[in-house]
Length: 90
Image 1: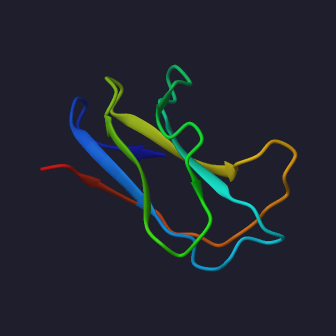
Image 2: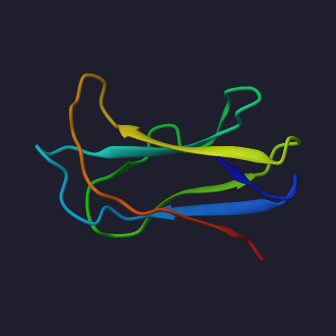
């Protein structure tokens, strides 16, 4: 779980650090833990070492957010190592 000043705009980026196994893609979502709403993401898949950004989000009133990484396609068993970064937008 991450925390930041409510109302601030943050951006999230991530690369996969190796190819997905057995292939396919992973998705990164940022979730408001108080409501379960997806703040940004909702199906952005990463399938290479390139940096991918699902976009920017506004920190909810609770000041908390959750970064969730999972499979892009339902029923997929894809795994891959990854990194993610969250930073303020200036």
